[in-house]
Image 1 (spheres, rainbow, N blue to C red):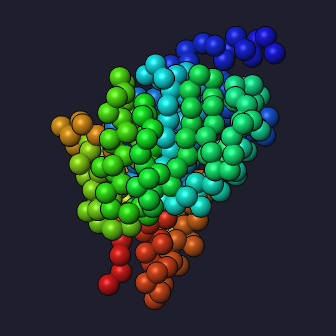
Image 2: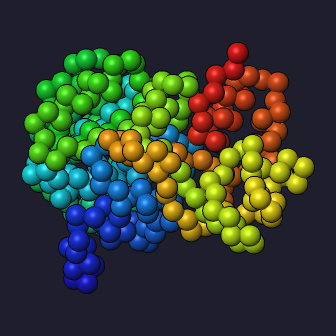
Length: 303
C-alpha cells in the first residue's frame, strides 16, 4: 500500500498520470490508448469533443471531474457535471459515479461522508478530498445557478435545450483557472457540438499507413472498402490496423481559443465494418442518422 500511495502522490497536476495512478477497472490500473492519452494531456481552458458513441470520452469526463475535485483545481476544486435532465443526473450518479468509486481503492479513501444530506443532494453531490463534484440536470434554470465552479463539464450537449452552453459559462465567473469541457454525439450540422468543433482548431487523429507511410485521418468515403469490408489506406488500399499510434493534428491551428476534437469509430478495434456498411445502405432514415452520429461521430439529419 505504501508504494501505491507514493506513486499516487507524484505529478497529480497531470490528468493522465492521475488517472493511471488512481483509477482502476476490475482492480487493475487503467491504461490509456494513444488516442485518449493525447486528450488527457491537454489542459487547455476550453475543450470541445465531437464524438462517436462508446469511444472512451465519457470515462474521460468522469475522470476529469474526480481529478479536478481531488487536487482542488483552481484553489477550490468545485466541479459541475451537467447532463440533459435531472433523471439522467440521478441515474448517472448512482450508476457511473458510484461504480467508479467502488472500483478505485484511492477514490474510496478520498470520498467524504455524505451523512447529513438528503434526497438528490446526497446522490448528486460528492466531496472528493477538499473539492466538490456536483451532478446536475439542465432542463430547469434553477438547477444551473447558485454554484461557483472551477470546472464545468457538459455531457451530451446536443440533447440539452438551447442556451445551456452560455448559461454554464457563467458558473466559471469567479474561477482563477476556469476549465470548460463539452462533449456530445453530434446531431444537427452547424449547431451544438458541431458548431463548437468548427469554431475550434479541429483536431483529427492522424496515423501512418504501415505499407506506404502516408499519414492520414480516416473518413468513411476515403478509407472504407465496401467490397472487402475493410478500413484501408486511401493511397495504397492496404488494410489499416486499429488502435495504432498516431498524433492529434489541429487542421485549423489559427482557431486556438477552443481545442476541438473529433472521435470516430474508424480508429477503434470495436468498429464493426460490415454492420456499419449495412446501416449506411438502410432505407430507414433513423438508422442512417444513427450510423453517422454514433459510428462516425458526424452530424446528420435525414430529409
